[in-house]
Length: 182
Image 1 (cartoon, rainbow, N blue to C red):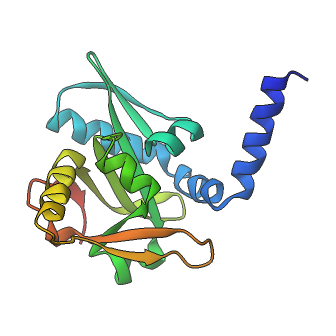
Image 2 (cartoon, rainbow, N blue to C red; image 1 turned 60 degrees about the horizontal axis):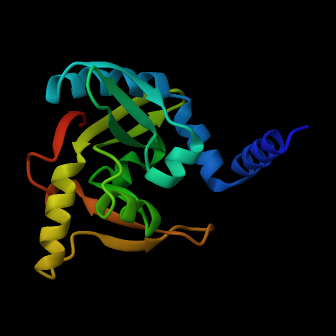
């Protein structure tokens, strides 16, 4: 067994055991539907895409990117967050970003271009929004410069991580570019 193969196996074993791995697996059940939605709406918003491909777990961890949308010219990256439908009623007015890791990737490093945020029931996304992260970054930094926080930092139950909850309505109309929302 080569060292590279062994490292890959250890990474996969760790990923399966971690919250990240189980969360990604949950969202991956509907990834083909998410790809179709993203391809259709990014095509309308940016330019014709060739297709969307899933990123590796490593790219997701380092760049908060779940999908790469490939164009005839440079690709754009999409962060995907899919939650269980049981949280819809309670949290449909907000979206969350893990802090500080994903938040830094999205605001300081500009790793993803779009955010797909949805709620799934079994293997189907029922409600979703596709948002332009350039708008998020602009409004995030503007609020910070004005000492006006947009989100609320919260502890994630049980896994010692934090996230920031943002309200959709606190962002301009340009933020959400497509949706299937109630």
